[in-house]
Amino acid sequence: MNPRDEHPDAQWIGEEAGPIVRPYVLTRGRTEPTRGRFDLITLAVAVRSPSPGEPGVTPECHAIVRLCRQPQSVAEIAAHVNLPAGTVRVLLSDLFDHGLITLQEPHSETDMHDERMYRAVLDGLRAL
Image 1: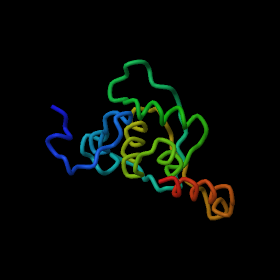
Image 2: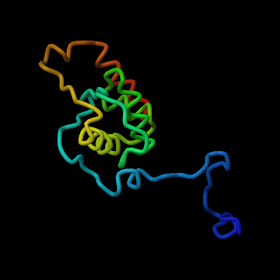
Image 3: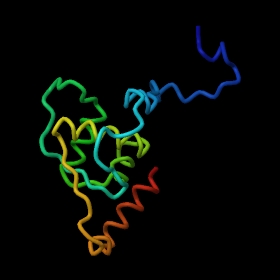
């Protein structure tokens, strides 16, 4: 039976969109990182690539590690993987726990005067 027949008033995404996975499924219902602070401007950098079949490393996590070959802010990552920043924070925490990424916080206010950083954060936020 077609789902549209059961709920004719429901809005459906086009057939080509495929299955929809809710963000809470990706984080197994967790809403907070296990440790660490993940502000929108926190930079994540890949330390190593996950081994094939590494437990707990989802396709979304693989995509994040690939992005983080170059330092990426939480806002940029969220925009690139098309996930809410809260979900990305939890996934980054998992990657940090697996030793796949490291975090870089801005060292001082002088780092905050870099226009490129502001543009990257704004672009990430706009993409959300």
